[in-house]
Image (cartoon, rainbow, N blue to C red; front, side, top):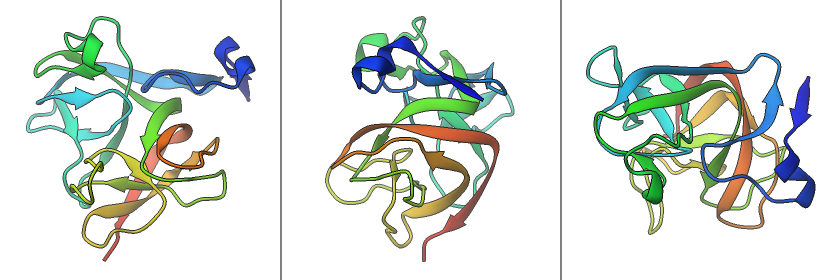
Length: 166
């Protein structure tokens, strides 16, 4: 069962990487260091070592979850972790993420792993396939909708598989 957070009553989606709803099975891992710059709300994978995490860069990587907002991040004003910051990752929860296009609760969830058209970056989420640049993400579903690019809640189950768009 999920419980709404107060900011949702006014219809606003929370800032990137912040929880939009409380989930009884929520799990946030805080035992990794950022490898490179990682923006809040982006899809992340294991880094070069087991104690690091970085933005996804290939469809064959294992998604860990979404980079959570953290007030202690050195790049807080830029909504990001700086290289080597201790990073929180939402593995099972309902964070706010950036989507590149209009989505709704029935849209398939994809994660971008390679830069695409203008304004798209690895770790962002979308619903349209971009061959060789996105992957279908099972273990997640959109909890809201947008009429274009913007923030939306993403319900993460904690168990993910990626299927490359070819």
